Amino acid sequence: MIVRTNWLGEFLKHSVLLAGAIVVLLPFYLMLSYSLKSPAEIESNTGGFVGSQEIMTDRRCIKAGKP
Figure 1 (spheres, one colour):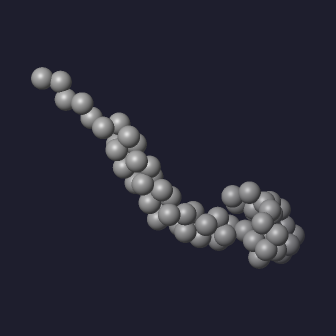
Figure 2 (cartoon, helix red, strand yellow):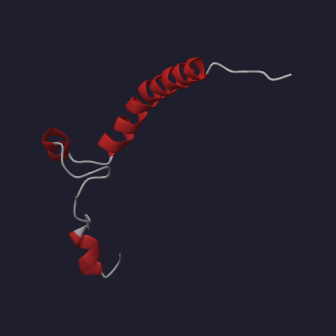
């Protein structure tokens, strides 16, 4: 017995599920991305996922010879 599936129905069902997953996961992606950026990078919408900040170092540690 051959069972035929409605490929259009399956496609639409998977499309709706994929769109729903994107809607649910997008706020978490943005929250993580924004937490790794400076306020200026968030406002200018530059810097990619983690931003383009230079490495921050404490000058007192550099003078003491500690990383």
